[in-house]
Image (cartoon, rainbow, N blue to C red; front, side, top):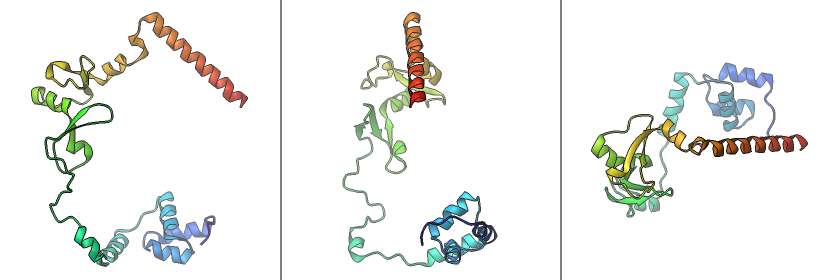
Length: 192
């Protein structure tokens, strides 16, 4: 089946039949791929009826899973962990230089591993409120003692990292430099 545009008749057929026919049935009727039918149905905002979804799901669940005997021997058994699984309490480092600690075996990466400075803060002061972050007073990410941690709002952090943290004349010069660079870039784009 080659790529060809969708005609108005094809689209009308989709509108009428998409809710109660399966995608393979529509694909066969229109001479298109199942993926093309699914993609067009999504683009047109069409959806299947509950009965059609139930029919498709019952067909898929009745199909036996084929697993080769060789792969069965090497599959993980229920509750079995890979050999390289770190124990709870293990520590590591992120690529940004933050120390992290394993707090759970299951869940997403950020649920299993937590930054140590967050754990130290929560141990002493409780959970970090929404809109706030923990920063290192001395700027050293490896120093996670509670005396080196402070909590600030994200707005404060943005101000700390903005150009306006510099003395007024330097901040103005940086702002003007940015304006000139933008103008130069706009002129170059107009010429191209």
